[in-house]
View 1 (cartoon, rainbow, N blue to C red):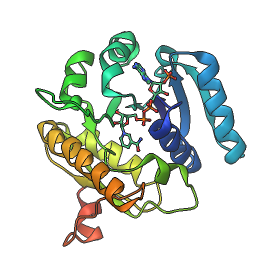
View 2 (spheres, protein in one colour):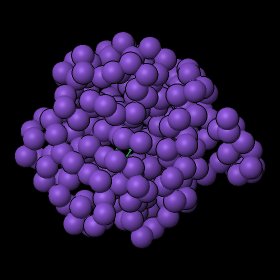
View 3 (cartoon, rainbow, N blue to C red):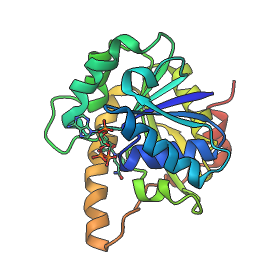
View 4 (cartoon, rainbow, N blue to C red):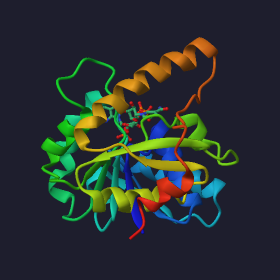
Length: 219
Ligand SMILES: NC(=O)c1ccc[n+]([C@@H]2O[C@H](COP(=O)([O-])OP(=O)(O)OC[C@H]3O[C@@H](n4cnc5c(N)ncnc54)[C@H](OP(=O)(O)O)[C@@H]3O)[C@@H](O)[C@H]2O)c1
């Protein structure tokens, strides 16, 4: 299993890349600059000695990957998407972690799907999982994340990948158009973090047994 993390040099992407590498996934960090990507990859390899991590340009990073995570600010999304669209292979699961902090007509994930012409292979997830929690490999995540997408098979593939991260529970959030709720709830959660002086307030859906959550992702 191989995953590219575009924006893996930043806060969220770095934590996600580290978690995936820690779980035994081959990770390629993507950046607009090769040196920056290589530096981030080396930093992870210093923490996870047997981690299979490399750093490449965004365009190179996506080649041969099963998953491509987009972890860039909304403001940079269009430029980055246009620069990698031609390099993303068919059947790759594209994951949007992007949260816009400005008013938008639709969700960032729907915009990304249109920019990439990724068809139904796009899933929106991880919005409410904080970068600081992801980066602290000693802490289990102990949080749910909604997976929004129109293709159940793509959501299932992503759910299986995310289940490798300790304590992260992937909950089916319905179609991609629901991503707007996840993205806007995250903006609200950032306010909760500020009010309580913490950095990792998360989301846990009550009344949902683990058995039901994981059964949904079984083959
Ligand atoms: N931080 C969190 O806790 C968190 C949690 C959940 C979701 N998110 C979402 O995840 C995404 C990334 O968040 P972040 O905090 O990791 O962001 P960030 O650190 O500001 O940026 C991530 C990476 O994106 C690239 N980038 C930055 N500005 C850009 C621009 N204007 N145009 C193109 N590329 C740009 C940079 O990579 P290169 O210079 O290497 O190309 C940067 O290292 C955001 O959409 C955010 O809303 C964040």
